[in-house]
Image (cartoon, rainbow, N blue to C red):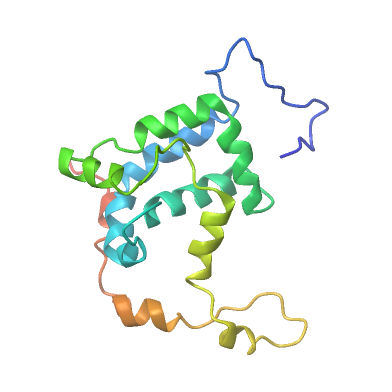
Length: 178
């Protein structure tokens, strides 16, 4: 991702491989944990996980971090992956707070040695394609940029329509009474 506003460019210092220019993004991983995002994603999108590879939570958090970093497209995920310091922290916190059984399940999802901290662009594209419906795209008006399609049948059929009265996902954000 090029630096556009300030008159300098980020450079990789081979002498300090564990430093990261993306340290501010790591606060969002903490926010995701406080908001119990993993549990919410497992509850609502867990059916997309399959038996191998990246989970829906890992894919969604990667997309969120990419967006927060100012990525112009999915392929910019490689910029975050190449940052050794950032990737190391993401690897370490990815299993934080999980019990031993769940950690083992997540490690068993990989047939080969798992070396990436973030999903590849192709894995992200495959995940996003689960939400795409070509028939809905045909309903877009000519020249219309913003378009909100109906949920795909695979999402509704597997999970069911969301309940607007279910606020379970927002309770983690309520202020605690002391």
